Length: 279
Image (cartoon, rainbow, N blue to C red; front, top):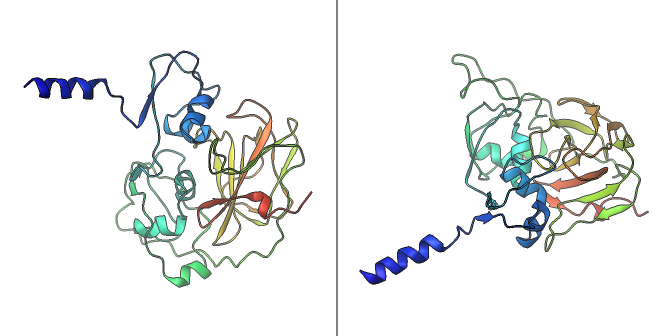
């Protein structure tokens, strides 16, 4: 009996390993660093928007890499969900039985798993994401046939180019203070350029910590993202050319004017400096 009471007391006093109780002096940035994660991911997991004000005693959820499922919210697309959890959008679609053009619905529960994909969609087209806007219901209208798949998107052979000029503030890192891309300093209104030609598959503010975010699909393998813009000049479904101005640099979702830039291959972040030309 005594042992049981002591066990219960110990359990009651042990914090949940997936939460952090805010203490005096804590900031979102310091908490993220102490857990070896990116502050953007911590903000997104707790629906916090800049300036990320915290209160002593507040409980923050420390996100695990994959919580198992995601309930579709307003503004979500299959691409943005895959981006948030570091998944390949082809395989996320396959795991949930979603065919091109990857239409999803408000309230739909998606398994955050990667299903097997046949070779054909990987070399052909799997959609641009323009049809991925959530509908106001949790399921597709009855009696309507599935839309035909979009035309094929060939492999992109454009050389990679810098999305903006400016001093590098932070580089890619997978340990310590995690950074899934690079941060480039600049001035408000400075041009943000498409790093390669492609199609815009997300343009919005639905991922906390990224501010105004644009995701461009270059082909069936490569995606790039441009965060914190003051003004987005493209919309989902737009086709963009390499070097085209797609946004103006700003500080939405962060503490200073800059561009946070990421490149992902099959859903996984890669170091942009390994692909961009030397400068």
